[in-house]
Image: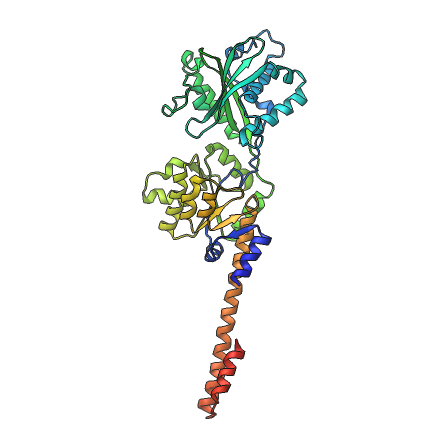
Length: 418
Protein backbone atom coordinates (compact mmCIF):
# COMPACT_ATOMS: atom_id res chain seq x y z
CA UNK A 1 0.00 0.00 0.00
CA UNK A 2 2.81 2.41 0.87
CA UNK A 3 4.71 1.64 -2.35
CA UNK A 4 1.59 2.06 -4.51
CA UNK A 5 0.77 5.33 -2.71
CA UNK A 6 4.32 6.66 -3.24
CA UNK A 7 4.05 5.77 -6.94
CA UNK A 8 0.74 7.63 -7.25
CA UNK A 9 2.19 10.69 -5.50
CA UNK A 10 5.06 10.79 -7.98
CA UNK A 11 2.95 10.28 -11.12
CA UNK A 12 -0.26 12.11 -10.25
CA UNK A 13 0.82 14.82 -7.81
CA UNK A 14 4.44 15.51 -8.90
CA UNK A 15 5.82 14.74 -5.42
CA UNK A 16 8.62 12.20 -4.92
CA UNK A 17 9.16 10.88 -1.38
CA UNK A 18 12.76 10.07 -0.46
CA UNK A 19 11.83 7.63 2.34
CA UNK A 20 8.67 5.69 3.16
CA UNK A 21 8.40 7.13 6.68
CA UNK A 22 7.88 10.55 5.09
CA UNK A 23 4.39 9.48 4.04
CA UNK A 24 3.30 9.41 7.68
CA UNK A 25 4.83 12.85 8.34
CA UNK A 26 3.11 14.35 5.31
CA UNK A 27 -0.24 12.87 6.31
CA UNK A 28 0.00 14.23 9.87
CA UNK A 29 1.53 17.63 9.02
CA UNK A 30 0.18 20.44 11.26
CA UNK A 31 2.12 23.48 9.99
CA UNK A 32 3.66 24.23 6.60
CA UNK A 33 6.33 26.94 6.52
CA UNK A 34 6.47 28.07 2.91
CA UNK A 35 8.94 30.23 1.04
CA UNK A 36 7.44 33.06 -1.02
CA UNK A 37 9.42 33.47 -4.23
CA UNK A 38 8.75 30.70 -6.72
CA UNK A 39 6.43 28.81 -4.37
CA UNK A 40 3.65 31.26 -3.56
CA UNK A 41 4.62 33.54 -6.43
CA UNK A 42 5.67 33.00 -10.06
CA UNK A 43 9.33 34.05 -9.54
CA UNK A 44 8.95 36.04 -12.78
CA UNK A 45 9.65 39.64 -11.89
CA UNK A 46 8.23 42.46 -13.97
CA UNK A 47 9.00 46.18 -13.80
CA UNK A 48 6.21 48.75 -13.74
CA UNK A 49 7.49 51.38 -16.17
CA UNK A 50 5.04 54.02 -14.99
CA UNK A 51 6.25 53.72 -11.38
CA UNK A 52 9.97 54.14 -12.11
CA UNK A 53 11.17 56.79 -9.65
CA UNK A 54 13.90 59.33 -10.42
CA UNK A 55 15.41 60.58 -7.16
CA UNK A 56 17.80 63.39 -8.04
CA UNK A 57 17.86 65.76 -11.02
CA UNK A 58 21.54 66.43 -10.34
CA UNK A 59 22.44 62.79 -10.89
CA UNK A 60 20.90 62.85 -14.37
CA UNK A 61 23.05 65.83 -15.34
CA UNK A 62 25.94 63.33 -15.46
CA UNK A 63 24.07 61.73 -18.37
CA UNK A 64 23.34 65.07 -20.03
CA UNK A 65 19.71 65.26 -18.91
CA UNK A 66 18.80 68.58 -17.27
CA UNK A 67 15.88 70.95 -16.73
CA UNK A 68 16.03 72.08 -20.38
CA UNK A 69 15.45 68.53 -21.65
CA UNK A 70 12.01 68.12 -23.26
CA UNK A 71 9.62 65.85 -21.35
CA UNK A 72 12.10 65.64 -18.47
CA UNK A 73 10.27 63.06 -16.33
CA UNK A 74 9.95 60.57 -19.18
CA UNK A 75 13.54 61.09 -20.27
CA UNK A 76 14.75 60.39 -16.72
CA UNK A 77 12.83 57.12 -16.70
CA UNK A 78 14.39 56.16 -20.03
CA UNK A 79 17.88 56.86 -18.69
CA UNK A 80 17.17 54.92 -15.50
CA UNK A 81 16.03 51.93 -17.51
CA UNK A 82 19.03 52.26 -19.85
CA UNK A 83 21.49 52.24 -16.93
CA UNK A 84 19.68 49.21 -15.52
CA UNK A 85 20.19 47.34 -18.79
CA UNK A 86 23.85 48.36 -19.05
CA UNK A 87 24.48 46.94 -15.56
CA UNK A 88 22.73 43.64 -16.40
CA UNK A 89 24.15 40.44 -17.84
CA UNK A 90 22.54 40.05 -21.26
CA UNK A 91 23.25 36.30 -21.22
CA UNK A 92 21.21 35.72 -18.05
CA UNK A 93 17.70 36.22 -19.33
CA UNK A 94 16.46 33.55 -16.93
CA UNK A 95 17.82 35.44 -13.91
CA UNK A 96 15.04 36.93 -11.77
CA UNK A 97 16.46 40.48 -11.66
CA UNK A 98 18.44 40.82 -14.88
CA UNK A 99 15.73 39.00 -16.82
CA UNK A 100 13.10 41.44 -15.55
CA UNK A 101 15.31 44.42 -16.45
CA UNK A 102 15.94 43.12 -19.97
CA UNK A 103 12.26 42.39 -20.57
CA UNK A 104 11.24 45.82 -19.27
CA UNK A 105 13.77 47.52 -21.54
CA UNK A 106 12.42 45.64 -24.58
CA UNK A 107 8.90 46.67 -23.58
CA UNK A 108 9.97 50.30 -23.19
CA UNK A 109 11.66 50.24 -26.59
CA UNK A 110 8.49 48.90 -28.20
CA UNK A 111 6.07 51.28 -26.45
CA UNK A 112 8.08 54.48 -25.92
CA UNK A 113 9.77 54.86 -29.29
CA UNK A 114 12.98 53.89 -31.11
CA UNK A 115 15.10 56.54 -29.36
CA UNK A 116 15.41 54.20 -26.36
CA UNK A 117 17.35 51.67 -28.44
CA UNK A 118 19.35 54.45 -30.08
CA UNK A 119 20.59 55.65 -26.69
CA UNK A 120 21.81 52.15 -25.85
CA UNK A 121 23.91 51.98 -29.03
CA UNK A 122 26.17 54.76 -27.63
CA UNK A 123 27.26 52.57 -24.70
CA UNK A 124 29.30 49.40 -24.44
CA UNK A 125 29.82 47.25 -21.36
CA UNK A 126 33.50 46.76 -20.49
CA UNK A 127 33.31 44.94 -17.15
CA UNK A 128 30.61 43.45 -14.94
CA UNK A 129 30.96 42.30 -11.34
CA UNK A 130 27.99 40.08 -10.57
CA UNK A 131 25.74 40.04 -7.53
CA UNK A 132 26.66 38.16 -4.38
CA UNK A 133 24.82 37.98 -1.03
CA UNK A 134 27.52 39.89 0.85
CA UNK A 135 27.85 43.06 -1.24
CA UNK A 136 24.19 42.93 -2.46
CA UNK A 137 24.90 44.82 -5.70
CA UNK A 138 26.25 44.46 -9.21
CA UNK A 139 28.78 46.95 -10.55
CA UNK A 140 29.41 47.53 -14.26
CA UNK A 141 31.95 49.64 -16.07
CA UNK A 142 30.53 51.00 -19.34
CA UNK A 143 32.02 53.30 -21.95
CA UNK A 144 30.40 56.13 -23.86
CA UNK A 145 31.42 55.91 -27.50
CA UNK A 146 30.62 59.57 -28.15
CA UNK A 147 32.41 60.96 -25.07
CA UNK A 148 35.10 58.33 -24.74
CA UNK A 149 34.71 58.19 -20.95
CA UNK A 150 34.12 55.26 -18.61
CA UNK A 151 31.06 55.30 -16.35
CA UNK A 152 30.49 53.17 -13.25
CA UNK A 153 26.92 51.86 -12.87
CA UNK A 154 25.81 50.16 -9.66
CA UNK A 155 22.53 48.26 -9.24
CA UNK A 156 21.25 46.55 -6.09
CA UNK A 157 19.90 46.94 -2.56
CA UNK A 158 18.87 50.52 -1.77
CA UNK A 159 20.95 50.91 1.40
CA UNK A 160 24.07 49.46 -0.24
CA UNK A 161 23.74 51.68 -3.31
CA UNK A 162 23.37 54.81 -1.17
CA UNK A 163 26.33 53.86 1.03
CA UNK A 164 28.35 50.68 0.55
CA UNK A 165 29.29 50.69 4.25
CA UNK A 166 25.65 50.49 5.33
CA UNK A 167 25.40 47.54 7.72
CA UNK A 168 29.20 47.27 7.82
CA UNK A 169 31.99 47.48 5.28
CA UNK A 170 31.94 44.64 2.75
CA UNK A 171 34.49 43.08 0.41
CA UNK A 172 33.36 44.96 -2.70
CA UNK A 173 36.16 46.32 -4.87
CA UNK A 174 34.55 49.77 -5.13
CA UNK A 175 33.31 51.59 -2.03
CA UNK A 176 31.36 54.86 -2.03
CA UNK A 177 28.79 57.09 -0.42
CA UNK A 178 26.56 58.89 -2.90
CA UNK A 179 27.22 62.62 -3.20
CA UNK A 180 23.54 63.40 -2.48
CA UNK A 181 23.82 61.71 0.95
CA UNK A 182 26.85 63.81 1.89
CA UNK A 183 25.27 67.05 0.72
CA UNK A 184 21.83 66.44 2.22
CA UNK A 185 21.59 64.30 5.40
CA UNK A 186 17.84 63.82 4.82
CA UNK A 187 18.30 62.40 1.30
CA UNK A 188 18.75 58.79 2.47
CA UNK A 189 15.63 59.07 4.63
CA UNK A 190 13.65 60.41 1.67
CA UNK A 191 14.77 57.48 -0.50
CA UNK A 192 13.98 55.02 2.31
CA UNK A 193 10.45 56.43 2.60
CA UNK A 194 9.88 55.93 -1.12
CA UNK A 195 11.25 52.40 -0.85
CA UNK A 196 8.82 51.60 2.00
CA UNK A 197 5.94 53.17 0.04
CA UNK A 198 6.64 50.92 -2.94
CA UNK A 199 7.13 47.80 -0.84
CA UNK A 200 3.79 48.46 0.87
CA UNK A 201 2.21 48.16 -2.57
CA UNK A 202 3.98 44.81 -3.08
CA UNK A 203 6.96 46.06 -5.10
CA UNK A 204 10.57 45.03 -4.62
CA UNK A 205 12.92 47.90 -5.48
CA UNK A 206 16.25 47.93 -7.27
CA UNK A 207 18.36 51.05 -6.74
CA UNK A 208 20.74 52.56 -9.31
CA UNK A 209 23.72 54.88 -8.96
CA UNK A 210 26.25 56.18 -11.50
CA UNK A 211 29.51 58.09 -11.58
CA UNK A 212 32.44 58.59 -13.91
CA UNK A 213 35.63 56.74 -12.94
CA UNK A 214 37.49 58.59 -10.20
CA UNK A 215 34.52 60.88 -9.47
CA UNK A 216 31.58 60.88 -7.04
CA UNK A 217 28.74 58.40 -7.37
CA UNK A 218 25.23 59.86 -7.79
CA UNK A 219 21.97 58.16 -6.83
CA UNK A 220 19.64 57.88 -9.84
CA UNK A 221 16.46 56.29 -8.52
CA UNK A 222 14.45 53.10 -8.09
CA UNK A 223 13.11 50.43 -10.42
CA UNK A 224 9.92 48.89 -8.93
CA UNK A 225 9.64 45.14 -9.52
CA UNK A 226 6.71 42.92 -8.64
CA UNK A 227 6.52 39.14 -8.37
CA UNK A 228 2.81 38.29 -8.75
CA UNK A 229 1.23 35.34 -6.89
CA UNK A 230 0.71 32.12 -8.83
CA UNK A 231 -2.78 31.66 -10.23
CA UNK A 232 -3.43 28.61 -8.03
CA UNK A 233 -1.82 29.79 -4.78
CA UNK A 234 -4.89 31.29 -3.07
CA UNK A 235 -7.15 28.28 -3.67
CA UNK A 236 -4.38 25.82 -2.68
CA UNK A 237 -3.75 27.63 0.61
CA UNK A 238 -7.47 27.62 1.34
CA UNK A 239 -7.60 23.88 0.66
CA UNK A 240 -4.60 23.25 2.93
CA UNK A 241 -6.21 25.23 5.73
CA UNK A 242 -9.49 23.36 5.23
CA UNK A 243 -7.46 20.16 5.57
CA UNK A 244 -6.15 21.35 8.94
CA UNK A 245 -2.70 22.47 7.79
CA UNK A 246 -1.67 25.95 8.92
CA UNK A 247 0.45 27.79 6.34
CA UNK A 248 3.10 30.31 7.43
CA UNK A 249 5.18 32.44 5.05
CA UNK A 250 8.94 32.45 5.73
CA UNK A 251 10.73 34.75 3.29
CA UNK A 252 13.85 36.84 2.94
CA UNK A 253 11.93 39.62 1.17
CA UNK A 254 10.92 42.97 2.68
CA UNK A 255 8.28 42.88 5.42
CA UNK A 256 5.79 45.04 3.51
CA UNK A 257 6.13 42.90 0.37
CA UNK A 258 5.47 39.78 2.44
CA UNK A 259 2.36 41.33 4.01
CA UNK A 260 0.95 42.40 0.66
CA UNK A 261 1.58 38.98 -0.87
CA UNK A 262 -0.07 37.32 2.14
CA UNK A 263 -3.10 39.55 1.69
CA UNK A 264 -3.37 38.67 -2.00
CA UNK A 265 -3.28 34.89 -1.41
CA UNK A 266 -5.53 34.83 1.65
CA UNK A 267 -2.89 34.13 4.32
CA UNK A 268 -2.61 35.74 7.74
CA UNK A 269 -1.03 39.19 7.45
CA UNK A 270 0.44 39.35 10.96
CA UNK A 271 3.92 38.79 9.53
CA UNK A 272 6.87 39.85 11.70
CA UNK A 273 10.56 40.67 11.08
CA UNK A 274 12.88 37.66 11.12
CA UNK A 275 15.10 39.22 13.79
CA UNK A 276 12.36 38.51 16.35
CA UNK A 277 13.17 34.78 16.11
CA UNK A 278 16.81 35.12 17.15
CA UNK A 279 16.62 35.46 20.95
CA UNK A 280 15.66 32.10 22.46
CA UNK A 281 12.86 32.29 25.05
CA UNK A 282 9.38 30.90 25.66
CA UNK A 283 7.97 34.28 24.63
CA UNK A 284 9.78 33.94 21.30
CA UNK A 285 8.36 30.45 20.78
CA UNK A 286 4.86 31.75 21.51
CA UNK A 287 5.46 34.56 19.02
CA UNK A 288 6.51 32.07 16.33
CA UNK A 289 3.39 30.00 17.01
CA UNK A 290 0.99 32.95 16.75
CA UNK A 291 2.62 34.81 13.84
CA UNK A 292 1.38 34.38 10.28
CA UNK A 293 4.99 34.26 9.10
CA UNK A 294 8.31 36.07 9.08
CA UNK A 295 10.06 38.32 6.56
CA UNK A 296 13.67 39.44 6.06
CA UNK A 297 14.83 36.14 7.56
CA UNK A 298 18.27 34.58 7.47
CA UNK A 299 18.68 30.85 6.69
CA UNK A 300 19.25 30.07 10.37
CA UNK A 301 15.96 31.81 11.27
CA UNK A 302 14.05 29.21 9.25
CA UNK A 303 15.58 26.41 11.29
CA UNK A 304 14.77 28.20 14.55
CA UNK A 305 11.12 28.51 13.52
CA UNK A 306 10.94 24.78 12.80
CA UNK A 307 12.61 23.77 16.06
CA UNK A 308 10.45 26.11 18.15
CA UNK A 309 7.22 24.68 16.71
CA UNK A 310 8.46 21.12 17.24
CA UNK A 311 9.87 21.43 20.75
CA UNK A 312 7.43 23.82 22.38
CA UNK A 313 4.20 22.69 20.72
CA UNK A 314 4.97 19.13 19.54
CA UNK A 315 3.75 19.93 16.03
CA UNK A 316 4.58 18.10 12.82
CA UNK A 317 6.22 20.78 10.67
CA UNK A 318 6.75 20.97 6.93
CA UNK A 319 9.28 23.36 5.39
CA UNK A 320 9.85 24.27 1.75
CA UNK A 321 13.24 25.33 0.42
CA UNK A 322 15.43 25.35 -2.66
CA UNK A 323 18.95 26.47 -1.79
CA UNK A 324 22.04 25.18 0.02
CA UNK A 325 21.27 27.54 2.90
CA UNK A 326 17.83 25.94 3.33
CA UNK A 327 19.28 22.45 3.93
CA UNK A 328 19.52 22.77 7.77
CA UNK A 329 15.86 23.82 8.01
CA UNK A 330 14.76 21.07 5.60
CA UNK A 331 16.57 18.39 7.59
CA UNK A 332 15.23 19.73 10.91
CA UNK A 333 11.59 19.60 9.74
CA UNK A 334 9.79 16.25 9.87
CA UNK A 335 8.63 16.97 6.33
CA UNK A 336 11.29 18.90 4.45
CA UNK A 337 10.09 19.75 0.94
CA UNK A 338 12.55 20.60 -1.83
CA UNK A 339 10.71 22.65 -4.42
CA UNK A 340 11.10 22.41 -8.17
CA UNK A 341 14.63 23.33 -9.40
CA UNK A 342 16.09 22.99 -5.88
CA UNK A 343 19.83 22.41 -5.43
CA UNK A 344 21.21 18.92 -4.78
CA UNK A 345 21.96 19.85 -1.16
CA UNK A 346 18.32 20.80 -0.57
CA UNK A 347 17.07 17.62 -2.28
CA UNK A 348 19.36 15.42 -0.16
CA UNK A 349 18.04 17.03 3.04
CA UNK A 350 14.37 16.84 2.04
CA UNK A 351 11.77 14.16 2.73
CA UNK A 352 9.84 15.07 -0.40
CA UNK A 353 10.95 16.53 -3.74
CA UNK A 354 8.48 18.44 -5.90
CA UNK A 355 8.70 18.15 -9.67
CA UNK A 356 6.16 20.92 -10.36
CA UNK A 357 6.02 24.56 -9.31
CA UNK A 358 3.76 25.94 -6.58
CA UNK A 359 2.01 24.53 -3.54
CA UNK A 360 -0.61 22.51 -5.41
CA UNK A 361 1.77 19.53 -5.44
CA UNK A 362 2.04 19.74 -1.65
CA UNK A 363 -1.73 19.68 -1.24
CA UNK A 364 -1.97 16.70 -3.59
CA UNK A 365 0.71 14.91 -1.55
CA UNK A 366 -1.13 15.60 1.72
CA UNK A 367 -4.39 14.22 0.31
CA UNK A 368 -2.76 11.13 -1.21
CA UNK A 369 -0.76 10.30 1.93
CA UNK A 370 -3.92 10.57 4.05
CA UNK A 371 -5.67 8.22 1.63
CA UNK A 372 -2.82 5.75 2.08
CA UNK A 373 -3.16 5.71 5.84
CA UNK A 374 -6.95 5.65 5.62
CA UNK A 375 -6.62 2.46 3.56
CA UNK A 376 -4.13 1.00 6.03
CA UNK A 377 -6.42 1.85 8.95
CA UNK A 378 -9.39 0.29 7.16
CA UNK A 379 -7.43 -2.89 6.46
CA UNK A 380 -6.15 -3.21 10.04
CA UNK A 381 -9.63 -2.56 11.41
CA UNK A 382 -11.10 -5.20 9.10
CA UNK A 383 -8.44 -7.77 10.03
CA UNK A 384 -8.98 -7.19 13.74
CA UNK A 385 -12.76 -7.47 13.38
CA UNK A 386 -12.62 -10.70 11.35
CA UNK A 387 -10.03 -12.21 13.69
CA UNK A 388 -12.21 -11.48 16.72
CA UNK A 389 -15.22 -12.92 14.89
CA UNK A 390 -13.39 -16.17 14.06
CA UNK A 391 -11.95 -16.53 17.56
CA UNK A 392 -15.37 -15.98 19.11
CA UNK A 393 -17.02 -18.51 16.77
CA UNK A 394 -14.34 -21.17 17.36
CA UNK A 395 -14.40 -20.59 21.12
CA UNK A 396 -18.16 -21.16 21.22
CA UNK A 397 -17.78 -24.37 19.17
CA UNK A 398 -15.02 -25.71 21.37
CA UNK A 399 -16.22 -24.74 24.85
CA UNK A 400 -20.01 -24.59 24.47
CA UNK A 401 -20.58 -27.53 22.13
CA UNK A 402 -17.44 -29.51 22.96
CA UNK A 403 -16.61 -29.74 19.26
CA UNK A 404 -13.08 -30.93 18.42
CA UNK A 405 -11.24 -29.24 15.55
CA UNK A 406 -8.56 -30.98 13.53
CA UNK A 407 -5.25 -29.03 13.40
CA UNK A 408 -5.38 -29.11 9.59
CA UNK A 409 -8.63 -27.14 9.62
CA UNK A 410 -7.14 -24.48 11.90
CA UNK A 411 -4.11 -24.13 9.57
CA UNK A 412 -6.33 -23.89 6.47
CA UNK A 413 -8.54 -21.32 8.20
CA UNK A 414 -5.51 -19.16 9.05
CA UNK A 415 -4.18 -19.36 5.49
CA UNK A 416 -7.45 -18.74 3.69
CA UNK A 417 -8.42 -15.94 6.07
CA UNK A 418 -5.36 -13.96 4.92
